[in-house]
Length: 128
Image (tube, rainbow, N blue to C red; front, side, top):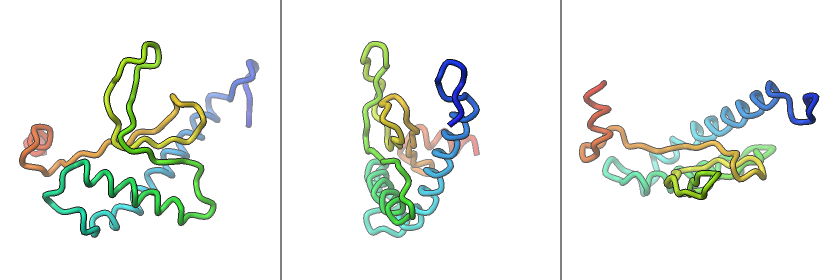
């Protein structure tokens, strides 16, 4: 790794590494989605949490089938806290962890944008 004068990783190298993690996580998500969509537990009326549970499981299966398997894990309903005062910021649908630093992660939020009983989805439909 390329280190700066202070000994920390060069900002460009860190950016490239983080981009590679994001690209890998999105590739896994893309490969997992057809299996999610055809899973008997998922339908047009499934709630967001049920779909997210199946998605995380299918993403783990895709990751495990890769050689070499990426050094990341997918955590479900992880709590996000403010780093300076432990204030609960809410739950994250899928947290992609790829380092030992608890404050370094990539987040996947799942939304049902075609739902007819969800204010956010209805707003999205009006925009489109």
